[in-house]
Length: 67
Image (cartoon, rainbow, N blue to C red; front, side, top):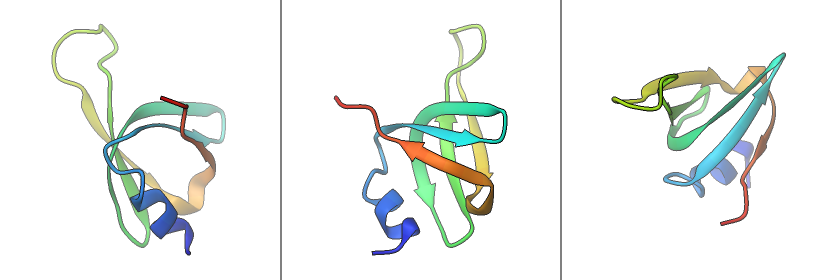
């Protein structure tokens, strides 16, 4: 199982993606061979969130919190 396949098994789940000096938390929307897309919460906690695209090569690790 590749990293991309493992991530794809969590599409629709809340994940924490750790990159250099930042932690991105959101719902995993999609994964391809070079990027993943998260739906993140808005800064003000109302209104629509934003889609954040992260390159897989920039990820230190991904955490899937227990439900």
